[in-house]
Image (cartoon, rainbow, N blue to C red):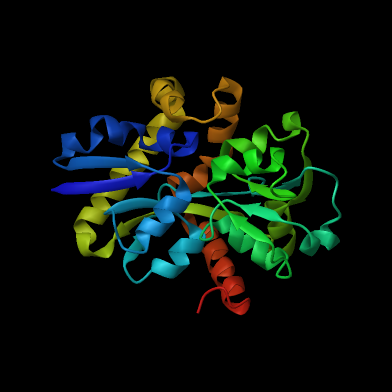
Length: 267
């Protein structure tokens, strides 16, 4: 069977998908095509069910549940790992509506969290996650939301943290923050989805136990090349929740869906 897969070039995804991208699925009878894109591109492609298996933001998952099934393996969900709203100069969170904000994609969980935290913030510029710091440095925006590797290096760029959106979420809900997930097209059928999920879980467990084996693949695609940054990124976003969402993970997703619905973000 042919499977098309989309995931991001970020270290957490490439480490989790390393075994699959290098032959694990083929050894179990699947032909695989892999497609690496930034998460907002993957979100947009999911709206048209472009790939059989894909990484998407939980924000987008809330919009595509009719066509895609959430996998219990592969999620980026946890504590202390939320998006950071940063600025070129110190800014009081209460004044955020006055400033221009670069957002790494309209369908990202980062944008959903911004809408929940500061519904009055209207001056948004949507861009890819890897351009947020560039726009800040150029003075085209006053603030920006950092996700992925950029959140580890913003202080070296002389930027200031206005709000840790993950910390805000945890204080408001007591839940881990659901950021991204892996979903499968429901038309694949339960048997294929179950088998793929098991293989993905096997790949994740192996990559956590033997990070040196996926290091080259991770480095080939990473935006920030510093080995310490790449390790921090993987350690932060590939967690026990990535192996299995469990009851706690599903509860956090339900809370996110409820808050999004109450805020009018999703129907």
